[in-house]
Length: 617
Image 1 (cartoon, rainbow, N blue to C red):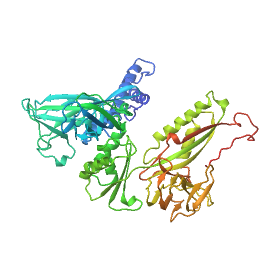
Image 2: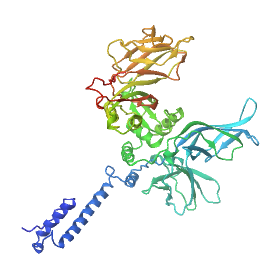
Image 3: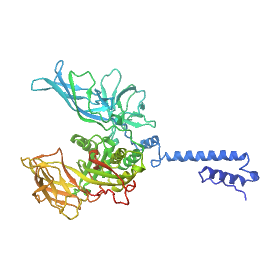
Image 4: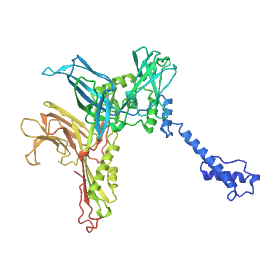
C-alpha cells in the first residue's frame, strides 16, 4: 500500500531518516530503490540533516522567546525590556573614608568643597585601583585647640572605577543615544542637559522610577540595556517626561568598574591636587560590594516578581523584591509580616538585611531604604521596622579517621582540604537568612574530601552575641529557635563569657543547672572549679525545648572579653535560621583533627586499638 503521508513528529536524526525512507519507498516511482546501498541514500541523509537542523534551530529559537526557557542573557534582557525591567548593572566596590585637610596653605575660606570625581588610590593584592567620589562634599572650617584651621569631610563614599564622559548633540526630538560601555555602574550615571552651546547653565536629569507620576515637564531620562550589553539612553515624549529639543547638548559621566576585583581595599590615599593643605585619609569601611551584572537566573526570577508586584510594596515578597531592585549592597534579605513575628505585632512589616560590605546596615542606610525606596511604593499604612541580623556562630570540631595506606597525600594536606571544604560550605550554604546547617550533608562532604577518610565525627556549639547593658540592672532575652540540649540531669548546656559585677578582680559567668535555672558563678583562681554565687538568678530561666533564654536582674559593670556571648549546646546537630537569624561558621571557630584509623590500616585485630571520638561536647 502506497505511503502518501510522511511522519513529521520526530526530531531525532535517525528517526527522521527512517520516516523519509518509509515515505519514499511507498511511492511507485521509488519502489525498486535500495535506499541503503544507492546514491539516493546520500540525498536522504541530506534531507534528514536539513530537517533535523531546522527542527533544532526552531526549537532553540522558540525557547529563547519565553522567560522560563530562555538560556541566553541577551534573550532575557530583551524579554525584561518588554516588562520595563532594567537588569542590575555591574556594581562598583565602595569604600567609606573621612578626609581631613589642614592646615590650609593659602587663604582660609569658611567652607571647602571636595568635588565629584576626586581621585583616591588603594592597593589590593599589590595591584593599584582608583576610587572616585561621585558627589560634591562641602564642609565648614574647624579649629584645633592651637587655633590651627582644618577641614574635615566625614563619611565620604568612594567608588572604584574609571571615569567615563560622553557628550551628544541632539539632532531629533526622538533620538536615542548609545552608551558604548557594558561595565558601567548605572548608580554612578549623571546626566546634564544644556539648551545650546551658548547657554552655560545646565539642568540635571534623573532616572525615571514612577511612570504614573511623570508629567510633560518631568526632567527625567530612561535607560535600557541592549542585547550586546551596552546601554541606550532616551528621554520623554511629552506625556512621559520632558522631551529634548534639536540642538540640546547632553553630557554624561559615569564609572566603568572592575566589579569584584575592587573589593578588599583597606587603606586609601588622596590622588588629587585641588585641596589647599595636607590631606589625611581615614578609612571608615573597606571597599566591598563590587559585583558582576545581574545573572540570567536572577533576571528570570526578578522579572517575574517585578511584574507581579508592579512596583508596589504590599506583601513581604514585594518589599524584598523592591529593596533588591533599588539597593545593590545586599548579600541576603529577610522580610516577614507582624503576624509571623514573635511576639505577634499586626500592622508591621519587619526587614532584616545582611549587606555584602559589612555585617549591618547603618542607621542612615536603613532610613534611606525606608523613606526613599519603600515609603513611596508602600500602598498601605504598614509600619516598617528594621531588625539587625542575628548571627548564630557555629563552633565546629571535626575529627576524621583516615587510612594512610589508601592515599599518597600527607595528613597536613588532607587536613587543609577539610578546612577548605568547611569554608566553602559556609560561603555557599550558610551566611544567608534561609541557610540551614545539616549535619548529615556536612559529614558526607567531609568524608568525600579524600578517599582515605573512613569516617568523621563533628561536634558543634552555638555562639550568640548579646549586646551588654552596662551599669544598670537589665533583662536579656535570647531566642535561638533551635532546641537546647537537655538530658534532665544537672549538666551544663549553656554558659556565658566572663564579666564583672563589682569592683573586685572576680570574673563572673552564667550557666544553667540542667533543669531550667540560670546560675551566677565564678571560678576558683587557677582552676576550672565553680563557686556558685547565685543558684537561681532572679526570674532567669532557660526553655530547652523552645530555645529561649531569659535573664533578669543582671548588672554588668564591664566585660572580661571584647564581646558578651552565650555558648550553647544544641539538642539537634541540624541548626536552622528563622526570620533575622543567619548561621555562619567563622574560620576562627573551626578545629580539624586527623586520626589514623587502626582498623583500615591493618594495625589492630578487630577494634582493640581503635581510637573512639565522642559525638558530644
